[in-house]
Image (cartoon, rainbow, N blue to C red; front, side):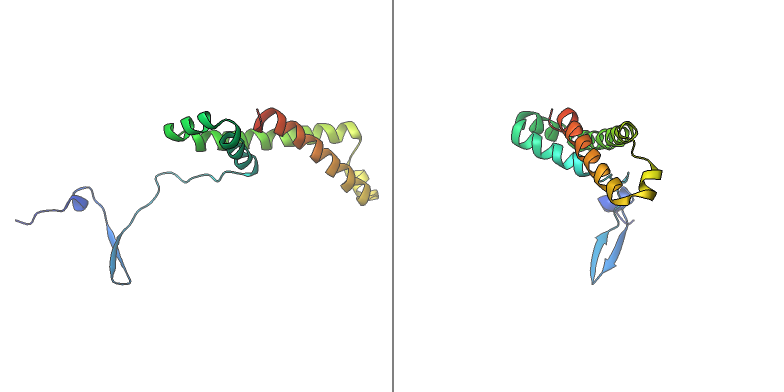
Length: 124
């Protein structure tokens, strides 16, 4: 009677790579990347809210928090930019008629919207 190894008992499979047997491992769920605002939030927490950062890190909730902040920030940016563009009269017609003016106005709107997002979500 042949005895099974612990790896065989749990159904772990191996593949040979350059003469070495390596386990075939897959993540159970794909990890979502942390975007710009999530990374900014992580840096803020590390530098200014270190106990909260350490707590989330130990509880393994940090990545979920950063992903949530990033998603909320992106959504807020889109909403603010569309509202500000409408209020400023920045339209597709303006884009077709005077691209440089449109780009300048949109850059200004993006900067204003980002200041609001950073203040309300990332650095709070």
